[in-house]
Amino acid sequence: MIQTTDTDVLIIGSGAAGLSLALALADQAKVIILSKAQIDSGSSQYAQGGISAVLGKNDTLESHVEDTLNAGAGLCDPDIVNFTVEQGAERIAWLIKQNIQFTQASDSKDNCNYHLTREGGHSHRRVIHADDATGRAVVSSLSLKVNAHPNIRFIDNNIAIDLITGSSARCLGSYILNLNTGKVIVIRAKFVVLATGGAGKAYLYTSNPDVSTGDGIAMAWRAGCRVANMEFIQFHPTCLYHPNAKSFLISEAVRGEGGKLQLADGSSFMERYDSRAELAPRDIVARAIDNEMKCLGDDNVFLNITHKPKSFIIKHFPNIYKRCLSLGIDMAHQSIPVVPAAHYTCGGVMTNRQGRTDLEGLYAIGEVAFTGLHGANRMASNSLLECLVFGHSASLDILTKLKDAPPLSNVPGWDESRVTDSDEEVVVAHNWDELRRFMWDYVGIVRSTKRLQRAKRRVDLLRSEIQEYYSHFCVTNDLLELRNLSLVADLIIRSAQLRHESRGLHYTLDYPEQSSIAQNTILTP
Image 1: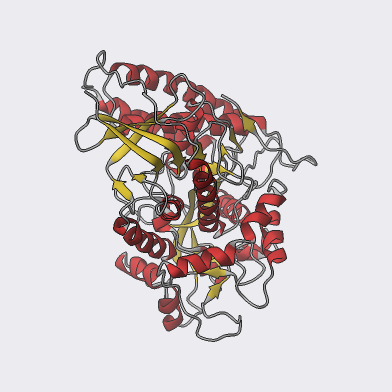
Image 2: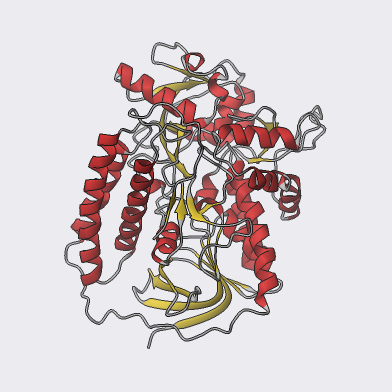
């Protein structure tokens, strides 16, 4: 008999979006948070820079809105941008009540008790932070609150396989694989929330943790939800380039505090690409670095902040300094080797401002969702803000509907009677490697029609092989992640093929100009 668990709200994902939503719901609802690893395994944990919000006396909501719209290259939804920015200070105040220890200001020139830094695309200092490990501070503090709440149950080492709809037009829960036992269980829920993050692991080089495999986007698509703007994959300009430094970011705040990008000979180059130089939006900086590397045949460029005092560097970037030093790089005296890496999925599952998707009872918040906030390029430090704002908004909507939600109904069981254990796990590993390499080569920072056609042919073949494998063998974590990643890769490629222009994060050699008409790319199952 398959194990079945019931709850009011099932939240799939344990980053800032999922944790903040759970705490907002838990006084009035039973909540289960599902994580396929530990509670701190998601991308939120690795967010270094901070959270953008209008807190300084010289800053304005209008300026934050304008900066976000400019970074988004004409594709942001102005109503959603205003909706998000207006709540910034309130969400920060909520975090402070949750005991997040933000870095204090050494002076009061911004009329703010906390130190505010500036990052690419921002016209003012408006990024509040906890040293250079803001995500870790947020996740650790919220985790303590979650674990202490009697109405919240946290389940780790379990991966969602698919959403359950049965014969209804409503999400009824999810099939779950327990990674400890290998058994499939069912969680029935009145409401299901996807807070699963992005899909950076579709690329060979990424700043994302191993869990970022596009699970929520893939599950929502298979359940009949539309996705939008999947072609806009943000590449963070400065990931540490070192054989022993997997996925370690050098925060944009290093450039915000005066760090200069340089070539191997020590010359700077960003001034040739944009008048804002190192403080240009991420798409511009990443393309500039990519172009310089290709022109020179270099494997990386360098980020230099040695003109700042060592005490300043250690105070503002203690974790980055420590990590670099452990690899033999003293950033107070040496330039840091950096390279762009896949960082953020700007598109995702289409939602409204309450986080509702096309499927009744299913919500999506955070990086997994497409809200219209980021447009064609996310501005730095708007991501954690989005998690908090839409987590709060979704909680209000769910609580208003909870009393009138239909009772939990019977769901179809999980049938694995006709499958066997695989004796060829090497197939999964090989397909995973092939996928990430051709996505990097053909669907990366600079694209072309031919490159996208090559990628589409390969992903079609790969998906057919994976589906055959999925149909005949028992599910495993690696197989489920590969199945999801291959689907998301296909959605990225298809979206990129439909955009016959260069805009924001999507740059193609065949259509280098930006169209006069700004349109979202919407795919329907």
